[in-house]
Length: 132
Image 1 (cartoon, helix red, strand yellow):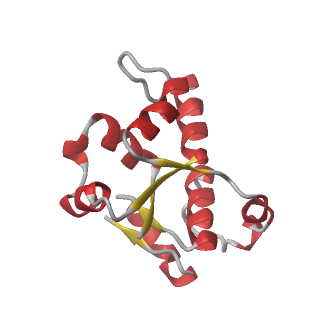
Image 2: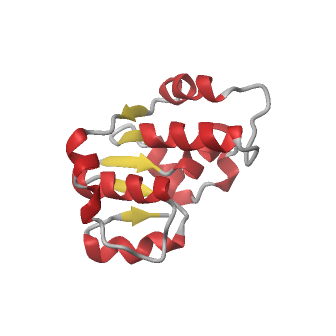
Image 3: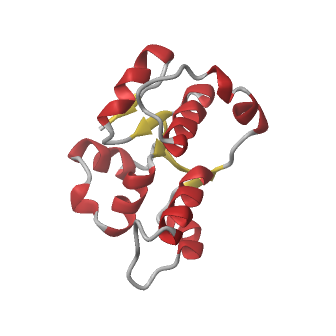
């Protein structure tokens, strides 16, 4: 199956795997699964580092795509049709633009999202499949 790591799940998978649920760990470690990291996550991390909201010891944001690939994760590009149709994602209480774009990417590309964010459940009626 195909799965996309939410940004916090990517960070935990790379640097603090104890924070991952057992179910998510098993999905990530299953060699039959394709695990993707949206390019949006790298943008979000870079912005949050710049704003001082997150930091990494001995790792720069520029190194994260390489870390992800070395961990067996594939980089999921942002397709033009996904961006152009983003206006179709219904408004909801969840306003984070990075999360909303990752949600829309998963809905449009029919990929399951791995996330601990409980607010994502409001998008299940719009065809988002999210697991924690």
